[in-house]
Length: 358
Image 1: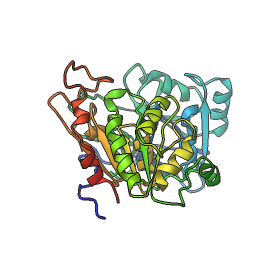
Image 2: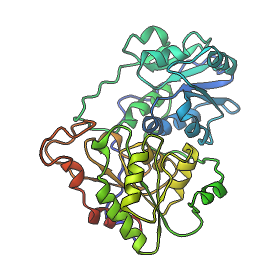
Image 3: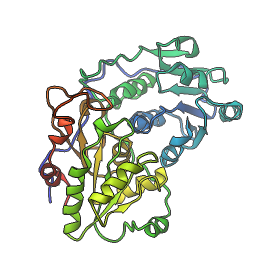
Image 4: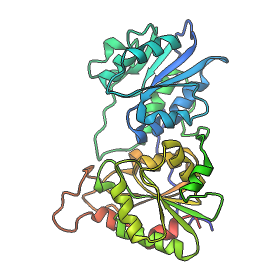
């Protein structure tokens, strides 16, 4: 059935400069990229990193430095050659040695923190590119202006910030296109957990959001959608990251018969489920961005945050946002004393059902 609601497409605006040209005297082994630190943010950088990858000469390699929790994501990206992960807040001597051993000619720092720029500084990399501000300028050889965002007044998707970096490096492309992620997954293991994606038409539901309850569509409403889906003879799997088990358990209670895998899958396995399901029901969360990265499709419900800035990329999701006068407040919890979470409760199960791929 054709989806009755238009798919979300990011507002990127027009480029504000011509493609740059980096004075790369020697690429050495290739390029190294310091990833952002949060799952959703990292996924939103992927189209820009892909465009930078295309600038590299044949035979050169791309490495990504990331927190350990994001290792599975970057390992699922087929055009990333090496993933260097670290376990603490900052890289240690062993990780520093791995960065030096990669012998990159170009480094790109995606986060806007001082520490992330420090991670790639003093490693023998001649070209170090990133945004200025926060005392980072002395750590970078080439700088873009500091990124200034006014919450609640977004006109463009956050991807624009990263596309500007890719354009500074020389990319002429200005879109969210990229090859889909391809996680390496043991599907027999998933089947053993009760989720055999080859059998039946699955609805994957991610009820949590690490940011807080102001991003989470109420479980009584998502439970109604799950029950309606299963009433047609189809299957529901509940997914999410460690720390979201409580939301998964409550939704499982509201939707008897659903398979609850919250906190029981790796990042790669979660990506496989989201990409292999017939439809996904997600909040503005890391799971939403993962689903978009693997070519999943479905419905994303927004509440306290603005899809203009952080909507799902890829053009396969419907975004539903009931926007009262108080939204987007960008709060973790609802600050109201009456009619709490009205930005979320304004989206109804009937609206979600009508927008889901059937």
